[in-house]
Amino acid sequence: MLQTNLEHIESEEQLKELIENNEKVAVCCGRMGPMCIPIYDVFEIFQEKYPDIQFQDMDFDIPDASIIKGLPECRKFWGLPYTIYYRNGKVVKATSSIQSAKEVKSIINDVFA
Amino acid sequence: MIAMSKNMQKFDVIIIGAGPAGLAAAIYTARAALSTLVIDESSAGGQVKTTHQVANYPGFVEPVAGHELAGNMRKQAEKYSTKFRLAADITALYLSDQEKWVELDDEDKYTAEFVIIATGSSPRLLNIPGEQEYKGSGVSYCATCDGEFYKDKDIFVIGGGNSAMEESLLLLQFVKSITVIHQFDELQAEKITADKVTANPKVNILWSHEPRTFYKRENVMVLEAENLKTNKRIRLERDGIFIFVGLVPNSAFLKDTPIQLTKYGYVITGPRMETNIASVYAAGDIRDKKHRQITIAVGDGTVAALEVIHKV
Image (cartoon, rainbow over all chains, first blue to last red; front, side):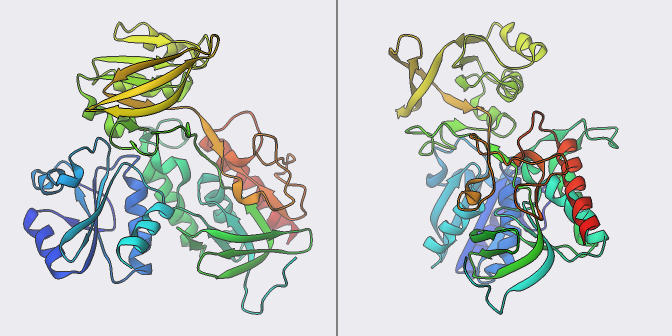
């Protein structure tokens, strides 16, 4: 169970609904680990700054997280968290391991501009 | 000097850095009814938030999760009306005896009579080809997070200090073998930890070598290392690479200011955390000092804040 202030995605259906109903979605799939927490924190801060983007998280260890683990973009990922950016229902960027606030901001400005 | 614009927001104290030193300082200055702004390029908590568990912070009988300790420090500072600007990049900084101001990437500007620098330090990168490219797909910086991806695999650990050996002990629970690549002829880690690692039959050490490049061949990571004594290069293959090579001070943003730094980039302070600029203090891991611990950072932040409070 993730202890963050983000909305938690708890099922495949929930994620599908989220990306179908929102143009810009960012999902951080991880654990309460050292590489994941900074990204959850940055997402929390960016929720206010970028109200048109849905920032949510997903527990890496729940069975339904296979919807993210199984993405072709994540096939070679060997580091938590997996952070996926969706636009109009499609993956436009995926990163593995920790990213700084600056890196997340840069991705957002790039893929959601 | 650039003239202060009229729309600049004024605080009594600006604290740059939201780790334990900055948050401790904020708790003190805010409780003393000084308007306090904390700025950080990331979220609050500094390195503590990325520490799995903290077992030596007084007051916690059982180890406390780093993110929990950091979160509580932030909440405590907020409770006393500290303002935060997080995930904000400093685009301009002016520090002189008479005047101090800071501009952020969204063009907001802030000025204060007192500034406390508490930006801490960050894990050092090797900055060699392949490191960034394979981060998260062969190159890792966290055993807790990524160790299980390497179950029954052969890996490299780069580094021979405390963090490298402590993380190696954790990795040994998962991996088939570890090859430690270390630039010296002996490990710098505390003997008790180093002995546990070296006694493990799954560990071998390549002394006096430094990595020069990483690349991938099919699914394995190739590491090219240089023997520092003979300058000969060798190529080795393993399933993954974990890097733990120390820390660097987060002081790049001070390079155009008159703040005095050591040749390694740490801020030089006196015993009251004062820098060479009047009313500018430094606290925590950014300071030039021998020991770096959460408790010491908190103490530094407290001293700096009390100095400010007494001068107001």
